[in-house]
Amino acid sequence: MEALESRPRRRFLNYFLGSSLGAVVVSFLYPVIRFASPPLIPEATTNQVEAGDTSDPLLMTKGFKIVRFGAEPVILLKVTDTEYRAFSATCTHLDCIVGYQKERTRIFCNCHGGAYDLNGRNVSGPPPRPLTAYKVNLLAKGSEPAKIVVSKA
Amino acid sequence: MIARVGKWLDDRLGLSTIVELGSHKTVPVHRYTVFYYLGGMTLFFFLVQVCTGVLLMLYYRPSANEAFESVEFIMTVVPFGWLIRSIHSWSANLMVFFAMLHLASVYFLKAYRPPRELTWVSGVFVLFLILGFGFSGYLLPWNQLAFFATKVGTDIAGAVPFIGHWMVRFLRGGDRVSGGTLSRFYGWHVAVLPAITCVFLGAHLALVQLKGMSVPPSCKEEAGKRQPMKFFPQFALRDLSGWLFALGCLAALAALFPWELGEKADLFAPAYENIRPEWYFVFMFQTLKLVPGGEIFGLEYEAIPILLFGALGLLLMLVPFLDRSAPGKGKVWSIVGAVALLFVIGMTCWGYMSLLPLYVVILSGILLLLLAFITRGGRRSEN
Image (tube, rainbow over all chains, first blue to last red; front, side, top):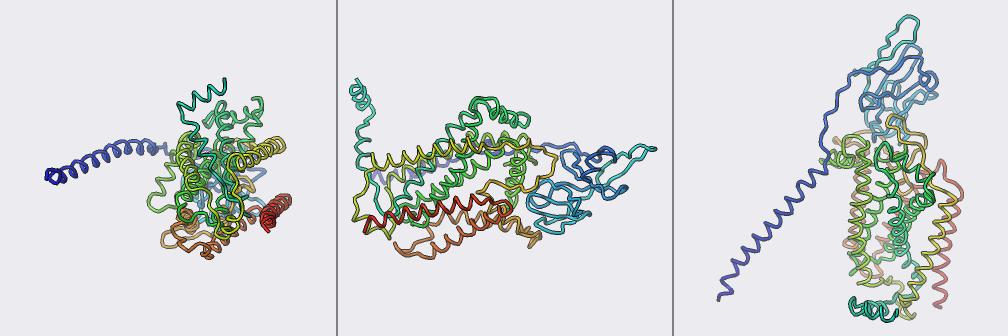
């Protein structure tokens, strides 16, 4: 008789013990998961960078160079002697850094074979979106090679 | 004296019970017995990884400014550093290779049937952990290949709906692959993954002991007729001689083909030509290359194969619960497995088409012939 009476009480105690154990586990796990998730760190916004001048040997020979735009890589292309273009160098497919194939006049990603035209449009291969364009200004000063300034469009 | 020490230990540890248990352990003998050695071989390479990995930790420094230089130091200055690091890299590849062979043989011989479902699940989980080791270890030398492989590999997680972005940040330790990613991957490679692997590998090995070796339905009769092999010493000695041979191969590979270090990672350089991941990821890499750009219902095309591969991984783990056919039946699953295997091999070959050396083809041909010969040999001795 007594055993029967104590059953609901035992069940209640078991339930209580179980849920407090669960709460302990959660109170351990929550800070661990939050700790392991990297905090958001605001980055200094970059609006423009100087990218050397038109006499840069990389631009002269390969026709392109990768410029540091804050933490972002930006590809600077020499299309003609007077025309320069800049795009985000991060492939829109899976985050690789693109390069320029001068002989085929296209921007190309060696990782998965994605190709963009010189307007940054994705023309073949896996990339889903075009590359973001940046503005290029040439600051000429007399007979010296012009300074290249890349800025957000 | 030795006998007295033995007696003393036995009184305290009960060693004789273990020896007694071990002496009863047998291995069935039939034409596919050779496949029983594959798991042990994988275990051997895992042990080599643990030993060489611990040694590498003595000199390796997990930071963006020092990682590459410390590996260079190991390769060029530390006595036998080149050997330890090359063995670590070669053994990693061989471990993946044998784990895959082990998986394929268990799959096609249907050893995952009841009561061995959990052995299979734990085994597949260990294979995924091994791939995790491969992926995280890949970044540690902080070279160009490592940098791009990690960029792509972590970006892939972004395809997962809803939590994709969080996963990418979690894996990278921030928005970009940076020095923070390196310390994170190091932590996983040397602490988190080994801890999880210990649990699952332990469970896997315990289950193998508990349930014994599975005899394929087609070999039941043959195994019944032939005398089973004692585990101690017959099978164990065969295992050990295999391990000794593997150690010799590792030393030869490390000495003749030391692992390259490449160039230090440059966060502002285009990916170089013919860049590709380690061979065991090439089939996924090649598939990703073939999927064109575009969007359907807000889902980018590239996400489709990624999610499919994820689903297939899960499916692989659940095979024992899905294949409920009677012993000797269930051909469909063998066909599905064969198609999957052909896909993986085909895509891998395609991925290497530009530079597949002839010797790889010849070597794999010889290996297959050898396997066929050994299994046939077993059948002949039965007649």
